[in-house]
Each structure stands twice: as C-alpha cells, then as structure tokens.
Image (cartoon, rainbow, N blue to C red; front, side):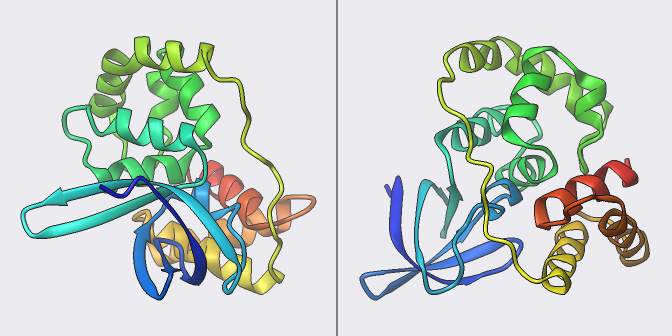
Length: 201
C-alpha cells in the first residue's frame, strides 16, 4: 500500500496531480486545502497518500499534511460519505476549521460546505465529535499559510474551475469569483475561493 510519495510535480489541476516518481507517473486526487500549498509544475512535491482499492480500480488520494489525511479517513467512516465527497468537504473548508466544527458539534456550520445537507452534517457531528476532540487536543502543528501566488487571471480561472467541480453552476460560480476577487484586499487562490464560497453560502 502506498502511504507517501515524493517526486516531481508534472501536472496539476483543481482535482488531481500527476507526480513523477523515478520515471513512473502517479495520478493523485487532492482537496483544495492541499492544492493551495503545492509547488509549481516541474518542482519537487511530497504528499501523504491514502491508497483505495475497489474492485478493479486503484485510486490515490494525496494530502499536504497528516491532519488533512486524518480528517479524510475520519469522514469516510461516516455513513453516506465516500472518498470523493470527503475530498469535496476538505475543499470547501480549511482542515482546522473543519476539525473545530466537528469537535464543537457545529452541524449548521457544516451545512455551509457544498454537498453537505442537514442529515449528513448531523451524522458527521454525531459520529465524529469525540474523535475530532481527541485529534484537536493532540494537534501540535499548524498548516503553513505560505503558498506560491500565480497571476491574477490564472488563479481566478482556477477558482472558477474549483467551484464548478464542487457542483455550482457556471453563472453562479463566475459571479461569486468576480465579486470575491474584487472584495478581498490581497487576492490569491485561497482567499478568492474562501470568499466565493462564503458569498454562495
């Protein structure tokens, strides 16, 4: 089972990466919380990996930090939440904010995440609250806030693509991204997506 990958980032988009490890290209699905902090294409990258084998399909899910991977694994234990939805949840809220929301039983706050309805948010709160409290109490590291900043047009396009992948309509996503880009003081991919999600919620 693959648990960690270190190699060269060949390609990235808002849903997946291709990593060259000694001449072998691995496709890795990642949440936006990880994508924010990745290097540029052609540079070195290292990710914590969860390997999922179902029937004849092998999927790799990658995470910048162990807390993201832990949250992903916690979420997939909840009835009705598969790996794709777990990735979408991590894309819609920062890992520390998600951990706080679960630990505090904040079901209404979880409903603001795209793809999460009332029943699912209540199941997450009920089933994961104790585990989230333990994880939060034992958390001794924080996620780095620094990230490379692409050109404005590029990150606005990336933000739009991210919202479309989360299920928003083209019209609603574009309007939210444009408003978010104008509203934040120092726009980058992370701040634009967060503000756009706030506006859409």
